[in-house]
Length: 528
Image (tube, rainbow, N blue to C red; front, side, top):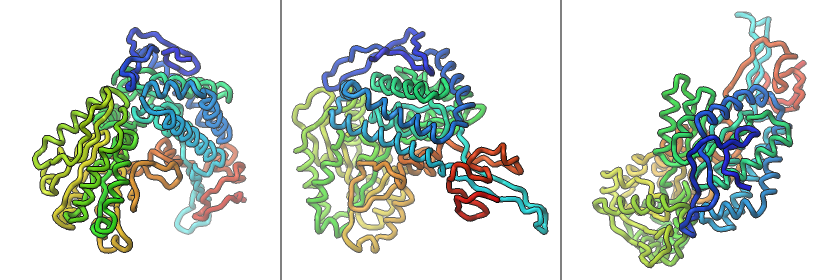
């Protein structure tokens, strides 16, 4: 049942007078549930509870945290069709997408549960004492990863489950031992509340401290700003626009105690078409990319928004085929009327730039909030001279840049902003002759793909979902996969500390049986 209230620890609260509703983009009408935005007092209470909860939660064993995470997954599944129905009514996305994203969310929670149950993720490192060392006695020093404290997670507009209330940021922060306060996204507040109810039930069933999780409603930016500026908050996770992520980053940096903001802020994901690949399979590549550009109405942070190739007959064939095939695909609804307006505005802004030619544009009638896909082309010279052409057009849109030669192609890649992904389409052995292109791309992206499409982010230990700014605010970390837990911890050392007072991860007897580094050697052994 949706109440429209804020979840502050184990209590539901609606003290404010500012209310809002969500929107069904498919029906182009408001949904019926009314949500109450969190007040300043409710924000402070959520942070206060989280700070108190942290004192206990950071000491909870990995096995108990694992039980909590697995129970969250169970409770989300128990929401069954209600969750899917509300998800679809707030996004316009199909049932299959909703169920797929729910499965991904469940998988992430269980992956982190397995990680913390095993325990070696803390990277325990021990250098034992040596009192006989000639220069001076060597102290006993032991290090492990310690959680930062309460984390604020901003729900993402385009992933109401996998990147939102119980998504990757929340799952990884809870796994690290950090209480979480979610700033629910106003576009899918109902989906957020249902998931919040599942987390609340899981916390109560597994006897987690009150305040380990809260979910706050907001219709604008004020709640998020107040959370980031609250002294009790120690880190922020965000998935969204460059404008929004940078604003939060600046707020956090200007606090009396600056805190990290791990923001994933989108990308145009350059795709490099090398000459031999275009000679041999331009039509096939174009068919594949027509599907990738329009997948999910182009509303993925890994959408291939920029395609680069050297002028040739093969590139012309690719452009003509892509232009023909992309307009054969039936348009689909966007997540919200405001997102549709933003798509149209940014598309028109790019199309109006000097040198840009519209190669394909779906021109038939579409329903309200449906997107008309488009492909444009531009000469490499104009692209280098005009930064506006680097704009992310969030939707089913891609720009093809026709480069004069290999040198210009390399220059364009080198001058790109940071990106989440880069893709190279090449034939066998063709990479060897384009080493400079590969090196230039590696310096601009977090993940490089060979002969594939960037859409689709596998949740696994090797995945990097991040990249140089502005793809993310810290390219050393990933927002996807179990490695994302490292965003919410800091290294902490004990020197000459009594063994019986050390955390179990660092005790001589290694009661958890985890893998540790002892005097430079990996081992699960006890220390005698």
